[in-house]
Image (cartoon, rainbow, N blue to C red; front, side, top):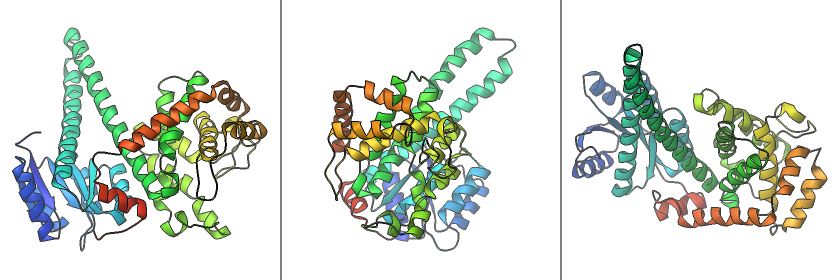
Amino acid sequence: MDPKANILVVDDNPSVRDLLREGLEAFGYEVQTAASAAEARRRIEAGGEFDLVLCDIDMPGERGTDLLKWIRSYDPDIAVMMVTGIDDAGTAVQAMLGGAADYVCKPFSLPEVRARTERALEKRRLTIENRMYQDHLERLVDERTREVLQAMARIRGLHEQLKSAYDATLTALMIALDYRDTETQGHSLRVVEYTTRLAQEMGIGEPELTAIRRGAMLHDVGKIGIPDAILRKPGPLNEEEQEIMRLHAQLGYDMLKDIEFLADSAEIVLAHQEKWDGSGYPRGLREEQIPIGARLFAVADTFDAMTSDRPYRAALPYERARQEMIDYAGTQFDPQVVEAFLRVPPEEWDQIRARVQEVLDRRPSGIPEQILARIASGATSSS
């Protein structure tokens, strides 16, 4: 933790402002407060040198997401962490895709705020240091080759650290999306690992493997834009509701396509509901028109759905799922991907499921128990 970091707390609720200010000051930070987005902008424009802005999303007048967009344009070196109610977690997730370093849900604990603040400041430090090294290299590359090579090694290390930080954020997002649908908790984690194993079986290596993993991880991110009344409906969807649900692939693609390191993964998100025979959506792609990552995902996703318990049926045995894969090879699935699936011993799939369950049993350490329970039950709180 950097005890000299300057933090601006923005919240229209004076009790929340005071709680965050006192707590962060106790942790060694310099803290100022603002009661609105407009006041926050004035403080920043007046020369306030802030390392982090901790901003409520839902405020009267200008929302926190508008302030985030302005800060990213005015001074990208200022890290922004959003504060939200559980009922607005989807907006917080979209804010992260728009450049927020992290978010915390109300009600929060001060230790949780501290941990997330330290993580956001560390991510900011790495980003600034990486840029400084890149600028330095541009000046020295022609005259100091040896020093440049050493600095490049340092940059590679920083890049790996940033990559790890991005992947940790994506994993947290994936878990949050799964908590929104209590019937399929753990589904995304399992599908990521199943898809990865299939890709390895087909000889796919880096960097394509990372793009495929991220695409599988974020395949349902577009469901953020689907109303809960449809997403959580206990019975079958009517025709109009089905049309709305089918929008999630396009919505997810639109969220990710302009993020440079997710561009290839966005194509997988867009195509993850396509079928080998062209009967899928949204574009009716067929055969090798479908990205290989989406073809791998289709087999992994269906396998997990069939072998997982649902409220309306028990999990199917492996042999039944195996036969379904064989029956639908060449119509729903790429036959070569099905062949790869059949080459993997059944016990390997069981081992993957067991490893994922261990992760689920540990639960994310940054989310208090009461918040996990409220997310799982679909309860809401005021932001």
